[in-house]
Length: 553
Image 1 (cartoon, rainbow, N blue to C red):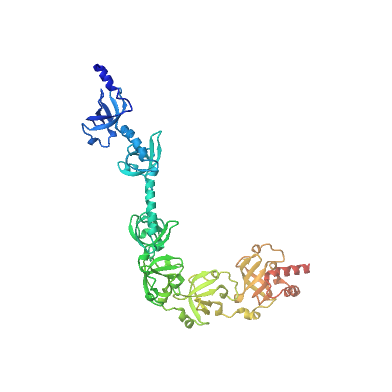
Image 2: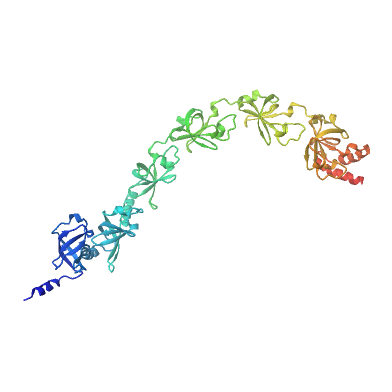
């Protein structure tokens, strides 16, 4: 017969580390649960191994795994989770071959992902949680999901899961089904997913459709966000389907009647219309006549007379304007409008009001490199070309004789109604002195005048009748002159002799050094000058006088 000590020793033989045994809850503490497994001492299980410590009651019977028969305090160390893991592992291996699916509950956030309880602990990488990047992993803790088993390591007894693959598969199935059912012209419900520039992506129950900005509205839209918001539910029209690339083009405006279908009847050519300026560009202004219908007022159609550099100088966005329909192109959805057509064209009366030869008065409004503009009346200018300012003076820029604001008289020379130009001249008020030049000057005449301009090749001298004569640098002095400014100054009075008259080029050649020549010397000089061809530039006089000097030597 066994002694008490032998009986106790014999009963203890059925308890060993690693074994799974039945236990009864005998005490529930805040951080641990005391369990009696029929051993000589009670066991302890951490509270976090229970799903909800609040529902654990005294007398509950549970399976536990013996980790240690005795710790430093003489207590049995037990684990409920490890018992479940050991019990479930073989079951998991049978059910969850790699590629199988299983339900599980997210237990905690760990480095790189989530810890999931599927009967045993399994790892869910962060990249496999969802099809989009997950920032708040803690939001998944406590939730149950279906997972796909992607990897099992029996030696290490760990399992890797994926929820993303199941979501992607589900989306692919829905996408394939949707693409098979969908046809152009269908109206589908969708949700605005994303709004970059010029497009919007619409979620259509598993497939993203592309809604281009040009298909959102018949009217002008600067950005898709003008009429759409992320998360908004909308009905869209299927425009095109590419099953190979799984692309769907969508439309929103196609649900409404195209306002351009009956455009000629609504806005006939010549009709007066009202609208609102919706956009200003360098070449014109876009005017909304009705939602989805805009017309363009070209910058040249804003005024008959004013030279408008850009529409923004006279118009503002949202301004209400009147205009006249000039043309319609329904295929290209374009309407040409004009504002100036609301008024009488002053150029229609210009031919009668300013016939050629009419004397006019006005203020100089503007100066350019090629002439001056004189205001004949409000909005109507005449242009004085630089060549029509003086019969005699060589004028390089009108500012030499005219300035802005000057009141001047002129003669109308020509009217070009097509190009809206009136040419006027100042010199035409007087007789051209060159027509009677022989009556004023002859070769050999001694003249007096003031230096008006210096050039590298000589000096211009102002004579009577507003005629300039040229003293070539070689004709200033008997001695060689390197720089004209060293011997002559603007405004200086000089006496010179006329040595050349060129009617074709309207030029008079003068010589200061010849002012004291004798008749014999003048004849010698004249013989050389006469050899020059008519119209030859007076700069060539230098060569003539050089030749004369050589002959004298």
